[in-house]
Image 1 (spheres, rainbow, N blue to C red):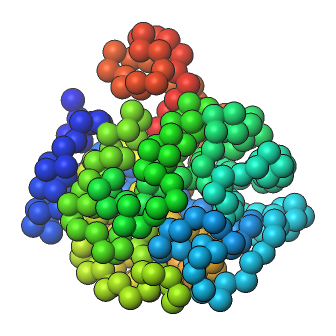
Image 2 (cartoon, helix red, strand yellow):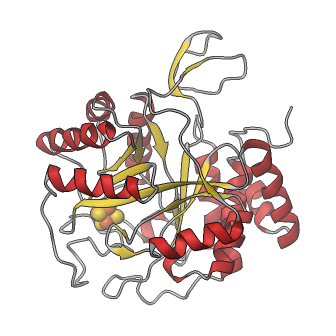
Length: 352
Ligand code: SF4
């Protein structure tokens, strides 16, 4: 029994109680969990490219890519394969180990999946891990992307099930969970997190993290975003998040999903070096690296390099770019979607 066991039965009240701890106590819990499962002085670095920008039919209230909001964003069609290769090589040369490709679709069409599959093969050939975020997927599409060599699929729950309807009305929370199940069942690693600062309560933050932690298998990557209040979106006027509340969210994510990579994601551009350092102390061990996050800004590479050097943090190299290790069921395995017989092969991949 470890001090930070992998649990899938968190109640919202238990997670709320973590948020309510004195800051130092919560940070100690998070640091303990972090050191039990991770190198505390390493971060994984990904670079994100928008491969198709804007004109999304969905109504996510935080998003400048929705066709419903006038944010002055220029629409772009699918980026050519050559450009993806060039951008991925540049990201690799700058130190990123994973290349994420994001497209503003409700769900990709057949030709879209084929085009992204070609991109995945190109990026994989450069020796990088691959991640995609393309909207809702069917099980067949998830398998097609997996077969092309995709390592991770990002699909965020965004917020709690209770608050979700205030933010998005064009797809349901269950739609999100269905895509996550399709992705997991295809053997892909799951990247799934949410956004802080959309007007949600602390209970909503606790409920969101309980939802993620109670999935049959914790997401390998948990992005925690601070809302970027883009003018023209309905959430542009939201009050800024208290920095300590944001750090608490990172820390609680670390405690309830101790093995996952907790990613300090959108909003980092406006965070001081000191706040980012607190996030690393709270258990964040992954960042987006590069000048842009889809359509919003990100700290420049030189500033990130300098900060990591000042903190003595090194870049984590993925253990292998081969297929994710097959997980074999043990007596405690909680993968509800897979054969539960100990020793049977599981189509969920091992947590990294
Ligand atoms: S978050 Fe994604 S699905 Fe929602 S509007 Fe933006 S691009 Fe579309």
